[in-house]
Length: 56
Image (cartoon, rainbow, N blue to C red; front, side, top):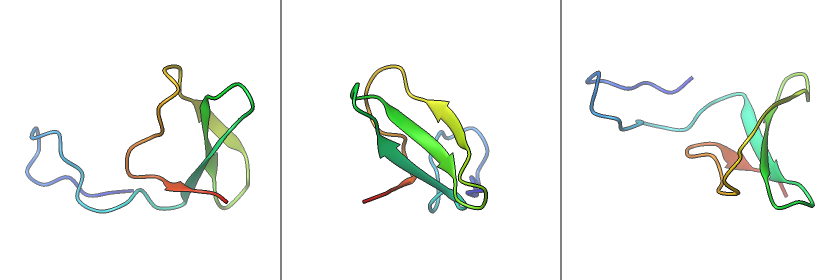
């Protein structure tokens, strides 16, 4: 996962590893585990996840 020093400043240093995201037909973004391909989470407000690479 990404590192976050110093703690509490709400900033991510670097990308989230082993994850990717794709947009589904309803417009929501889905986060996927890159190793297993399993869907992990759906973003409710139709904005992409921060720091997670997008699939083509």
